[in-house]
Image 1 (cartoon, rainbow, N blue to C red):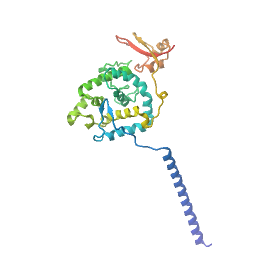
Image 2: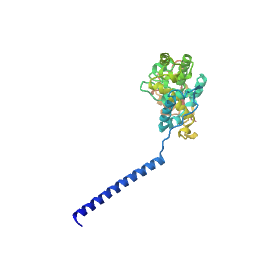
Image 3: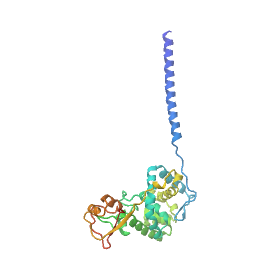
Length: 303
């Protein structure tokens, strides 16, 4: 075989090798894509056809309301770990929040504001310095009756901060006569919502052109309501045992300062860790002032 024929043969073999290699790579890629599509698929989420907040109908047919709600449902459905934790915390928090809302004449749907505010985490602080499940800044917390000093911060006290939130919401409802606007004002402030309504000559939250955070706020609340009330519709499957629960506790009233809470905990047959976890509003190892009415501590229920 002459040199020309050898050259042609070698070129042909090389071309066949490259073709086979590319074909193999394509096949591997195709197989990987097939496996991915078989095992991991992402779908649009269901949007409730009839949705209300505190008895007030959500106008899903109004300008871009449905799209805004869809965004919040998608974000919170596919942020699976965060939403699963919220679901697990929900019964523990709502068991405390619901009776307080009811006693104050606040619709039960307002428990979902706490979800939007803090993800139902008690020991959380925002970039603006708002603290606790209901995210009060210090000035507002004190205004609505919370005790905040170097030893104590009742923004972390679930019962008392919920009472404070109720005071605000009743004030906001008296201003607007509308629960949706009252809820929006929890994010923007009463003055902010009042000014926006007047400036834009509208009377509905859903018709307001607002900053991004407040524009998303109520739709985010509604998304959490939809997911928490029907978790399986959004791919979350929990049994009763999966939810976090409140510990069985006893209440002790203290009328004198405590210099060393770790030592005090020992006298109460519990650990300092248990005492601080059950009373997250205590900031350190000392309570230097208890006020005229004293303070109540929650302690483990032990024999």
